[in-house]
Amino acid sequence: MTLKTLLVASCYLLLIACGGGIVETRDSAPIYSPDVSSIPNAVPRDEPKSKYGNPAHYEVFGKRYYTLNSSKGYREKGIASWYGKKFHGRRTSSGETYDMHAMTAAHTTLPLPTYVEVTNLANGKKIIVKVNDRGPFHDNRLIDLSYTAAKKLGIISKGTGMVEVRAITKNAHYTTASVPVTNVTNSGYVGLYLQVGAFSTSTLAQQLKEKLQRQIGDTILIVPLKKPEGNLYRVRVGPLSNVEYGDSLAKQLVGLGFYDAHIVVD
Image (cartoon, rainbow, N blue to C red; front, side, top):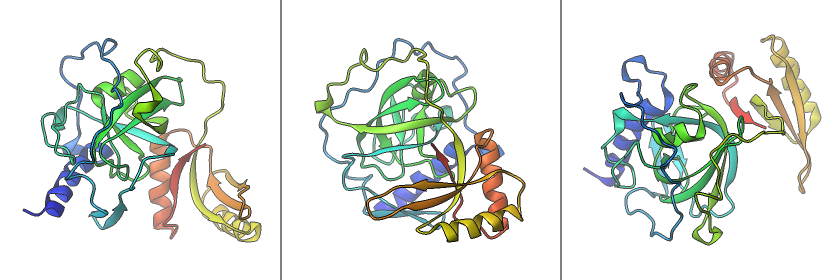
């Protein structure tokens, strides 16, 4: 079996865990729910890139993903999901064995391995995990956390959570103590939106807004973004009540001919 075949097979297995959208293959938590408070964060260290998990690009169900050469400066907000018992003990895309009790995660494009700090934007909890797997391949998901990592972050009950993911290095000197997992008041407002398009002119953005308003009854916004090369006008639906509604609305918009809609956290 070729490396590409192995990778795609591994990615397929992760797909059914990360999305939770296929009823007969839903993942689950362990029968006995352990106390994760004493499990430390992953400790960043220098490691060579995985021989198996870093092809220049790979495809899963017709969608191509491009692996980043470096994680330096990576920082992004999005939706986190988790995977657990169903994949415990199986081979990850990096060649390591998946352990749902370890502080690990899956990401579609970050180099394997990469260490990241994940912040739950709803409660301020922070964790550090080692990215050693590929996924999630469900639309509108940014990172797939191990069961323990998700429990420490506080997203197990809902299944998903709004997070910020930031790559860190060994030189950052992060420790368990410096990344608290207790509740922290989050004073900044965090919203969930469905971004349908982004344009260099407000005229084009307004045209898309008017077109959307004829199709759906949700609030539609034009959100400008100042950039050195010129303003960007983003057309967004929201704020949305929850991730599930965002998924449903994205599917509805595809049926109406809007193929680029994706959930953003801002």
